[in-house]
Image (cartoon, rainbow, N blue to C red; front, side, top):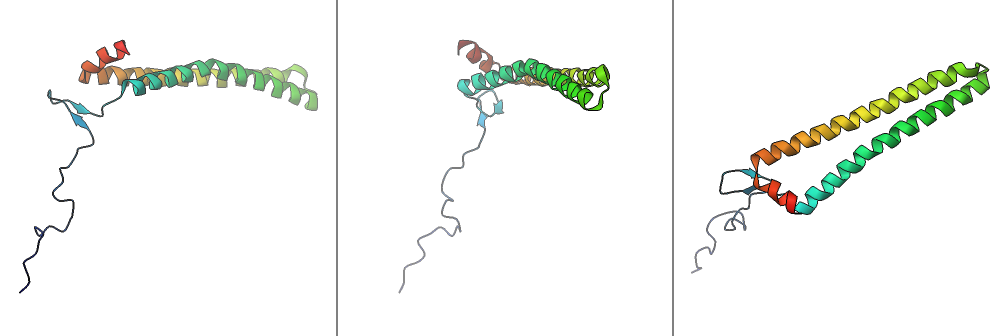
Length: 129
């Protein structure tokens, strides 16, 4: 006579393991992903570099517009007109990039303020580190 089955009838071998939720839950009932202070710091550094690149983008777009306009003027013989037109287009493109960077920084700041309102303990941790 064969002994009975040694398993509990579950199909999964992991049925007895405790399930771990991917987000942390505080005693206050607040939940969300736990962010490491180093991750917060590197995110702020990235946002700062992104914002500082806006000035570079402005200068490069103006220079490219001016060079392209001067090159077209030399090819077509329309002296300063294409230079002026392409320079204006370069200025517009550069300011558009600056405005996008400012909007991106404002969105990040707003998201961080909302995050700090939901979890006030993370704000004190940011000031220390």
